[in-house]
Length: 285
Image: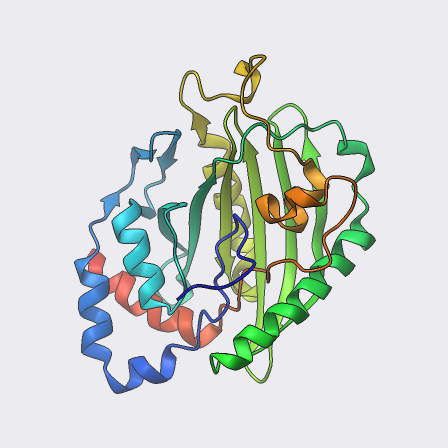
């Protein structure tokens, strides 16, 4: 499934919309999930040829092939940029919650961070909402639930020590529910590694410390680090504001915000995570 205006972010636009199909063919969905090759934590995993990340004890990691299978399972488009996925659980027994992180890499080049002090949260949110409305046209044409971008849970923030750009939004699916989409962009020498946390609002505060620890454990391989940029390296042609607003899609908007941007990462319903938790628990047994 090809979604127009797709940015470097994973377009998880209909995360729970596959539930009716799963209800009709649960065995097929379970078989697809079981076919994924997982690397269980604690361990260190390689993300493509760009970086590595620590897999905590309560998580499991899959590389590109498994990531694409997982996205297919959740009826979401995938691309060659989608390199890895980490599926984690927090809590135990009745209180166990499942959430996941998608890693994708945009090889757009070196993103300059000299506009870090000019991140206008209100203007960026308006632009994202405009882009989401445009993307809703595509969702309707596919029979998918439309999404509303409600608010910032965390406005865009750039840490110059780690060269990480972070933000979080709350998204509502019409008649379905809400999700919190927490995004981190890790700047490297040749592009940007995207780490997107997918969870529902009730799990967000519980999952966030573990997600932050995963991001903190991420490191670019030697020669790929942001600090190793050299004259003559490929330049992205856009800064941090455009990175939030649409990444490579926004390259044409070097002096402003694009009017049409990709949808935010989609809705993760409680029902979906209950189903996912049951498979995750079964896989661990």
